[in-house]
Image (tube, each protein chain N blue to C red):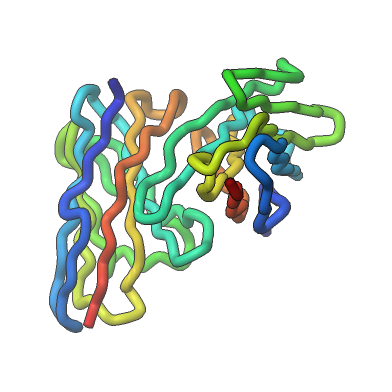
Length: 115
Length: 116
């Protein structure tokens, strides 16, 4: 069972545009929601993260919006650049019991930013 | 800070042989390390979690006798793929965390394994 559902699978955006990637989770026992950026042949790198008691977090061009009641969170990339072309994964971290500290990943979104 | 390295970055081995992949935390002590597997254009799949000095906990469906994990020190974990077969070809990624249960996971750069 996919704990974290991510969409779209792929996204093409023009340079300067806004890229939006959405994720939804089913389990309420998550305490941390990170986004990772992965380039081909490389490991994922933490991009930005949010805790469920916060509705929005912004770091530079990257913003996470978090809707606890809807169990949804999204990544917005403002002024998208060709260098942002990568695969993005959302994740949720288990908050207790046997899932404590474990990351559950979405399926990933391949973002292409055209110059 | 919080750098995790993997060695080798890529390896080609013949079917039936074993290959060892190292994961090191360079600037912090990693109480817990994770091993993931990633197929092309797919997400990360957790294979096992290991706490320093303890036996690894494997995810359902992962053969513990095939994928041997050792976490003998706070800065080093190894994954040995025994009797490798072509279907074991994949991208293997480790991550490390300073605390046993909480805190950020820092990912290594990955190791590309090709079994011929």
